[in-house]
Image: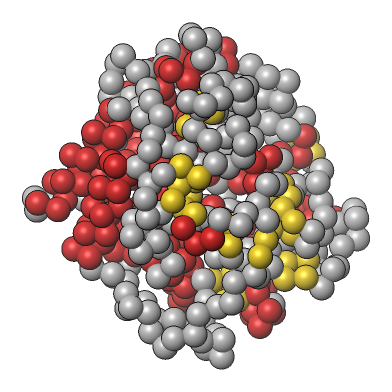
Amino acid sequence: MRIKKQLLIAVILLSFFGTARSQKGVPVFNPAARPGNLSDSALLDLVQRQTFRYFWDFAHPASGMARERSNISFGYGHETVTTGGTGFGIMSVLVAVERKWISRDTAAKFMLKMISFLMKAQSYHGVFPHWMDGATGKTIPFSRKDDGADLVETSYLFQGLLCARQYFNGDTDTEREIRNRVNGLWADIEWNWFTNGGQEVLYWHWSPNNGWAMNFPVRGFNECLIMYVLAASSPSERYQVSPDVYHRGWAESNFFKNGKEFYGIKLPLGFDYGGPLFFSHYSFLGLDPRGLKDRYADYWEQNRNHTLINREHCIRNPNHFKGYGENCWGLTASDTYNGYAAHSPTEDLGTISPTAALSAFPYTPEYSMKALRHFYGDLGDKIWSEYGFVDAFNESKNWVAASHLAIDQGPIIVMIENYRTGLLWNLFMSCPEVRKGLERLGFQSPALK
């Protein structure tokens, strides 16, 4: 899974910017400006807007793609952009337009520049690599053999692109071109190629240099549900995968069905204790879990209970880490004091990642708000920064990350917005292809009625 890939990323500090106002008009962080006495709504506004700066002011200037992280990635420098994180960034741009931080026309031009870049960037059977050079579109290898297509990262990208296609529905040349180009990219993805010769499962990687050498069939339950939904939803029938690929591939593993209780809370699917919280975030930035069910689970119950188990673990704090409690919780994949780790109740290093609790706002709004108040009010002098909250902190080690990651910042903006207005959920679920794909796989949802 992606958590294994992220272990390859090195952490090297980049000093923060210090100008008074960005060239794009969003106010730049002033460490002294952390207003107090904010209402819940005002605090959510502030957090979303400050975090959005990562995808706006720090976007790659040539392509608009999201940089992997705010410090230098794996020695590749600031040309390294991320495919999946860009999908999350696209969704954040739509939030910014709705909240009037940027104009619709400005956002549309930004989107068209990015999509035009993607049309010329390297791809493999229609699928983009994990990393690419934000100026040239050339693949930057994630590892020696991971130098080609990344189907999961591409799925996150298209979750965002389809939301953008639905959002930019105006009768202007720019918005029409956005829709046309997204449709072209979307129709070109050869999902069935990634069954590796017709197997009933999707494979994560393929490389023109190394073929299927990564050998990673994707089975659930984890962060990859969106990939199977999109593969069944392709507008090109010749590239669609059959429902059997979902039912006999994704849904067949020794960590798919669970049904046990942890801390007295039932977990329908997945690893014991649920795994890192991003499992309930990445696929559900656009895929609406409200009332979403199939023969295996109620996905609202799955995601809420996963969150509650994660929080309860931090409250009980069996490892006695400093700072843990009912207002300081949230274990997910992030930077940590000795590198990068997929934090969860079964891999608990004492590191709290703000994205975990904040991206859980739809599932646990009261508990997420308490965590937000604690992060901002009690710890803000240490963890609040120019792009919102830093990636992680560990009070037992007296450590605070010097980094922000696209895949952690994006879900904060998007899931808070889904909690507040349902914006991205409504956009994604309005896609006719997605609705048909969900029906093909046997899903039920209020959005399908």
